[in-house]
Length: 215
Image (cartoon, rainbow, N blue to C red; front, side):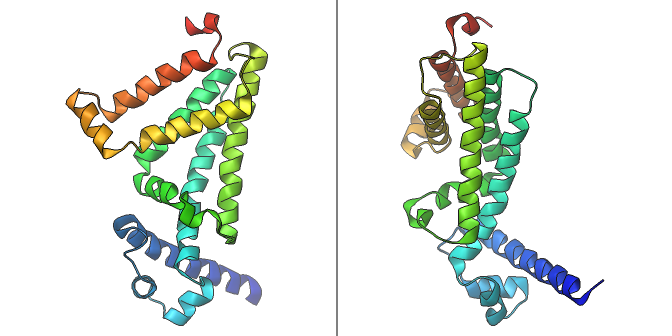
């Protein structure tokens, strides 16, 4: 093994150790309540080395968020490769977002927080990759909608790009429902799972052809 290869492996190992240490704090405390000092101590590195790899807490936050977005992207890709019609793929992608929020709640919380105005204008490389992956998810859904339109399972009188954005906005809103609305739904015996299933029922007649509604 060359010296260069060994150093690269050591660098990647150290990077992962720092990211994993930061992940523990971001998952438990959120973004604002942790310090670089705490992360350095958990990763067992001095602050100088920590800042060598990550210039500030924001860049480290994006490195953690990137891991979660990569998981979600893989879930979308898997849905897009299913041997089913276009509407079925759209439905699978919507379910992927729900499953991501359930199976990776900490990553989902970070994913939502990273989408706020506070971080949207960052020129960090990991932030750019996150945008690329999120855009990729959007393109995958648009392709599924176009497939459905061609097959006849999805209406042809809608704009596929606009509809993909509507679906994403509605899905994210349903997963981040206001606490007041949560209390109202709970009082009516409507769980988050039922609320999500009902959202799927509302989306279906909005985008599918009438003959397909009977299936």
